[in-house]
Amino acid sequence: MSTYIIHGGRKLQGEAYVSGSKNASLPILAASILNKGITRLYNVPDIHDTKVMIDILRYLGCKVKKNHDKITIDARCITRYEIPEELMRKMRSSVILAGALLGRTGKATFSYPGGCDIGARPIDLHLKAFEKLGINISENTGFITCICDTILGEKIHLDFPSVGATENAILAATLAKNTTIISNAAMEPEIVDLQNFLNKMGAKIEGAGTSEIIIKGVSSLKDQGYKIMPDRIEAGTLLCCTAATAGHIILKNACAEHLTPVLDKLQECGCNVEIRKNEIELKAPKKLQGIEIKTMPYPGFPTDMQAIFLSMLTVAKGTSVITENIFENRYKYTAELKRMGAKIIIEGKTAIVKGVRKLSGASVSATDLRGGAALVLAGLIASGKTKIDKIEYILRGYENLDKKLSNLGAKITKEVV
Ligand code: UD1
Image (cartoon, rainbow, N blue to C red; front, side, top):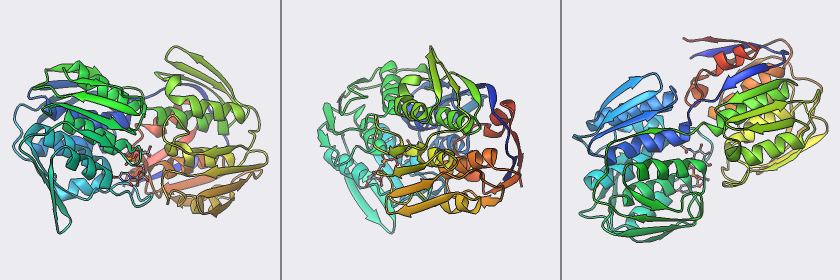
């Protein structure tokens, strides 16, 4: 069990570089098996979740080479179509491989996925989309087997704009016989990145970024290189850590367009934000103003930023009100924040945060990826020493978070056990 030790109270100041996006890398790594050839990906973050995805690709028969942020996937030979339960449980996104495997081999076997404990997280929408595409689904003792001779394009309406179900439907339909139309699709920028990657390889997909995606099936894809988009949640996390410490940051390799609701809320808190090409500069006031936030599917305020904002608002002026509309169990980390002196009341989907003068360092435990990042932020503003254990959750999704924060002036060390 690894830990972060943070000595709080230091202003963050300087420049930071945003890594490649976790949530774009994972479906794009999975999509690489649709190409019976060699795919090169750049700007892939070196985090636990991408490592798990690479392990699964290797298990399926791919030859994968890794050189810093460059990954080469040779998917000429796929020898297996079942995703091992042990790897499936390590990461929810492993379910994305089902769509890619079906597109490539017509078969996929997997168990229910794992991931952070932030709610029920079923996969019914993924399976409904597969059924629409003519795929037979059977379930036996927790294992799901999907089989089809040919994938036939169809109209798929998602009951909710699920990110994963939209990606899985795209992956299963890319090499289908005819045209698939997904309505009420998720509009997240990571879906646009997946579309851009697949189209670069020869797919015919349009509409990603809107609620209707049209996929004209093609017979094969070709070898390509592709650079993954910057991680908008990492960018938002670094901005909030700076804002909470009354600091000043210039974020490089950041896409402001993907961060509109986050930047709007930071400005509402009193921060000065300047946007330049691939760069965001933020200057924070001495004391932030409390605000209201409601999480929504994109282009609404991202649920993945909820915990980080809440943590920042624990020391803001007045009372903040946060409503979590995407996941039903995403406030577990607030119990740890309360141990540091935060005043938070949870009423169903709503968190009421009464700003306090300061937080105090304590020993706390990460409960999930973004909740863990929220504790790091709390450690940066707390007086004295904060020890965060179970940081494996944080390492799932942040590349070198401790180093990036140290470069900005934070006193944070990682102890790997
Ligand atoms: C993705 C992101 C995650 C983010 C989430 C919402 C990745 C790897 N992860 O997760 O960081 O927090 O989008 O922006 O990209 N649902 C169902 N049935 C389904 C699928 C989803 O009921 O079959 C529900 C979920 O329980 C949840 C909501 O839909 O309440 C949103 O889930 P979804 O958009 O699918 O999130 P993920 O793709 O898992």
